Length: 343
Image 1 (tube, rainbow, N blue to C red):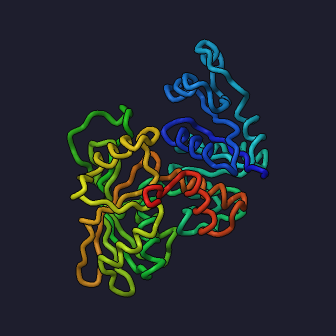
Image 2: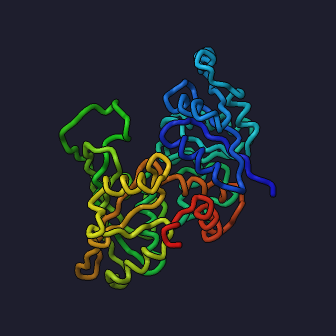
Image 3: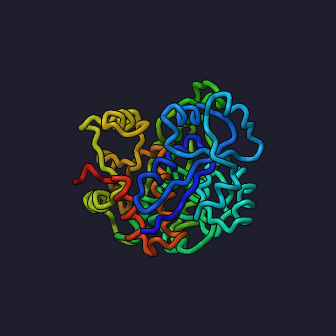
């Protein structure tokens, strides 16, 4: 079997998880990862025995890597030439400069949500518009919140024809280990509508969406309250049926001990998941409420890992490994062992 060759640009919070996710795909080969400095993530990679080859981007001081005994396999340009597709998880804005290198060597690329939409041919989601990304050179993922939100809305939309939605996002302020946002004891409002609602409408233009976003001084995950109206009334049982059928959605209950975001993160660690990661979003069964013709529910977004499956879907679409959402997402789910609790 000829494997699709993949590289990762930026070995940070998302880049580490992208590399691990690709390495699990038996029909893909992770050629290497690229970064600019011997960060803690890169040092940890070295201490683990360098399971992935490391390449240096322009501006990197190779001497600092040599001082630490960290082996370097080449330059960023060399990595780009060796692969079929790059997963770009460089800091927001850097992807635009990287794209010039991808274009130079005719290498496809998948960008993360921090880049401007204009960087890509298609604003991509594995479930909502997989087919639009088939064969395209440059795809861009949605943000973590938008990725999880679209999973839930698309899930209901395909069964019940959603017309509009309103969301309230309780957003973690930083990733675990981040210090740059400071230590706070406050909630912060953003102007409405939130970009997640706007992005949802970009990918799913047939749905009217709006949203509010509140920053909170926590690090493990976001919680989104979602209100949905469809062409016909969605009952709680109908919503549960749809959610339970979706491999990247896990239905949980407060009565079972899932009291909030921290409960889910702890459960993932207890399961032995690497870094305590969760690929699935969680829907609290206890939060699903019918009101008139609409339905309301709450979901948990594990911000560090939730976009990884959709990023791998994007590789499959761009390289035509699969050409339908069913085949593409099924293959990704299989290798990531998503929904293993159902088996």
